Image (cartoon, rainbow, N blue to C red; front, side, top):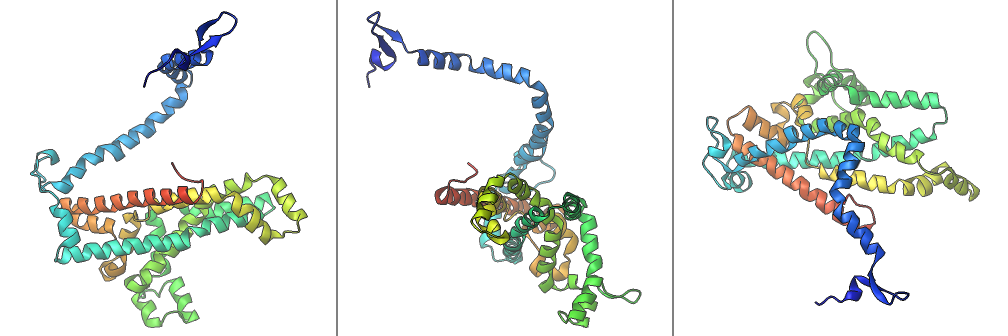
Length: 350
């Protein structure tokens, strides 16, 4: 393709000659001094950039440097030699997990199924709760009462996982000679939900109750804290929208349905995409503290499977392969959810 003078020059009728386009001159100057302008901006706001250093160090030390150990998924496990010097084993660990015929393959697929089910139940029951709590907070007119309720719902998030799981264990503890069953177990017996034998044996020893205990405790722990994002989106809604709805005769429920929810829909979609991205990332700390060999059938997840065979055992390559597959699937879920959201609406992460 040939370029003409008219492509980057304009004709000046007064002088009768071609002159350079002023807009192009500005663009050329910006491109020429781009990095100089960037340096000036950094020097001007150096305090803000200095605050980024700790975060960058955290990402480097705990996110990027550990990627080097992912080579262990494709190397023969040897604790003596560094990962780079170990022998290449190909995809043997992945084949053993996915299409093997031994106990490890069975336990991996059981852990993968439990991981998906726990995350899926958390998405179905745990994700709407912060939105509902934020809607309730918005209807409280007293600032003192609202602040009190918010602190009460936020407080469990600031407890350590050990303290929270200890409280759960105390509420549903099994009976013994020196003490009775937990308060929650006694309440369920009185309501006829469980038998006395089940309560005395302990709900944490029954695989059929683990998922319910995990989800309920998770909602209790994080629903209030997660509602902060949705409540911030709600209070940003213009009061004129509520006034227009009231003029049209909309009550409280109608205002929630036709004013509040549509206005915070973009926030809900963004949070939903991020939640789907972590669908298979179950934190092993809580499961590790709650489960026991009696509940492996419903409680064992990929993270605890990797911990049991990698850190506590000697199959580090196998455990790394299991975690890597889990993370790759999570990445694909983020990409898929974001693509669907971008095609179905104008809201997406990127």
